[in-house]
Image (tube, rainbow, N blue to C red; front, side, top):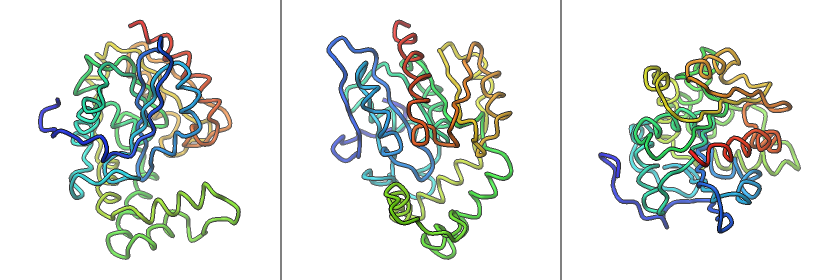
Length: 270
């Protein structure tokens, strides 16, 4: 169990957990981004589970999983230790780790803490560390508004004042999910995002199969930032997913699966 982690009751964690066939490949855990939840990967879980066990937890303070503390509990190192303790609690040893956005920074920390049990690393729509100025500015505005005016005002900051379009179930779900977040979770996550330091030395020496991929329209981490991430990691694969913005699992799930499934299969024998 990671240093500083406490035993976790698996029944307290919201999770999508799909077991693969008897001769399945190694399990894969998928980690969502800032203000996200397990539902962000809903469209890729079933296809992935044809080959392996797939686990998608709501991270602490998100979805159906209670927070583990205040703002400081969203620090990447603390959440990474929580992920590893949770995997212990559900009986998963060696595992592929997929992280999206802030979850990609988290996935890097999981590998840093326990590289011996990480079979491969997939980094989706993320970078070496904190994103560029425009994304940081947006995160600061949202977090500051949440602290000073509350979550409803923060949501208006996210959307530019535009509410959910009628007959948009996904948009309605995202709005409700956001409004139900505790402000401390939102603010702590923003702090983790904008202060994330690169793990450059670790990533340059990492001995794992790594896939870096992003949507062709991603503007949260710019393409040159994501190419730099791929170049930093020796032997990393780099793929741009068409017809997707920052969240390929939502916007083009088949495009993500087309690169993710063969990558995981090739990494299984490692």
